[in-house]
Image 1 (cartoon, rainbow, N blue to C red):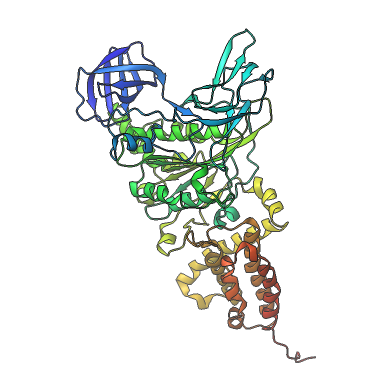
Image 2 (image 1 turned 30 degrees about the vertical axis):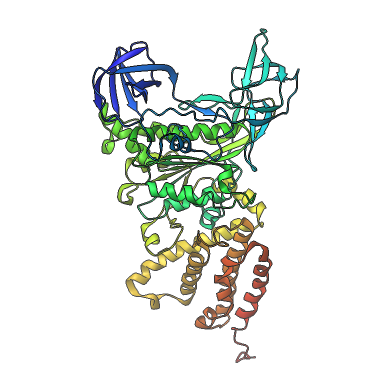
Length: 590
């Protein structure tokens, strides 16, 4: 079915003669065959958001509907791939047309000529239902790609093959109950705006360990959880997301660079192939899918990039993997919504954003979760969604931040003042929160020691007490504090500098296991409690602060995981050195 262009307004094209088209159909615009998607229908007129540069288009040119919704191709070849917002492989495009993406270029998302070694795990005569794994492909050294029966196919395996196949060749034939033979290939096509099906959603009770102390200790996230990282320019949002991509306890990483600066995506593209995955020793890219839709690429494609990313994440979740999706940043995605809404002449909401901003944000985050996958076996899997938010001027009262905070359960608030003081990660411990803390407290305690949660509460209490005492210090000076309060200030400073401050670029400090986190926190609080007791028995405050073991506490973060036994030895050293400061003379009345 063909229509004709009536109006061109930036990425928005209005075409008439499209009465038979449907919402969200993909169309090809003009002889250049630019990719677009119908986002509004009025009579026979379709409003189309075009995912490529529209300069030079004019009224009267042809618009052709494909009759299919915007979909992604799923199958072997996704891992290590670098796509744009609508799943066009940038590496293949560069090989075909050079460094600049040519308009209308058509390249298959998956390589249809490369052969993959398919190993069946089912055999002839087996009954299969949608979601069942029929075979595997070793896609990279660390990712086993599991080939699943697509939705809509159910019956008995008539034939199943072993050997090398392309993603479009038949690997299995299934005979349905009514006698129809259906061919199963390794490639699936899935619409991006509708979530993939699963059996049931599970409670988020399994912690996702990130190795970042401020997150794991105070504001943990569960597998299948949702988190937002709002912060002003320069506060470290991108580095926090890079750290989570590198170290989080997830099998597959989907990183969506949505509207961020090109040099940040370049850093990711240059850094990830060089990084060694701590779990496998292979390059981190061997379990990563990258979607790059930078700020200088067409604005409409930003809107699609988030859905492309979450659909790819759902596909790996359905195989039984734990997936983490990083969206950097949802603010740029919301700006794309605002631009298209303005060109459609819709009634604007707060700050010009469309009235449906919150519902679109919810659509994205609600597709995260821990689930039981489709299939006859009981496969548990999860998608954890972490979205960066870039509020103008760091003001989180703006609509995107507020809409996000109403949906997500974890808020890691980045603070410009902390970043200015070179305290990274610059997550403010006083206004951040995690609604998973109570659910995960038992699991975190089991992974370390029984009193882990007591230590965490005591440490947070000291940090909150420090904030109150700082108000007094600013008004009347530190000399007005009692010596016990000054000890609280010293311990809180130690928690901030020796524990919460973490160097992302130090080979040891970049990741801390839960066991080491427990031992480090135990050192700081043991010193605090021992010093408090010694102080009450007459020890001099200044002498307590000068004990040599304090230097070792400060350097505990640089002790490697293999040498953690040294941290246990420090406990006795703390007790010995602090007790030496207690006066040993006879009491006057003895």
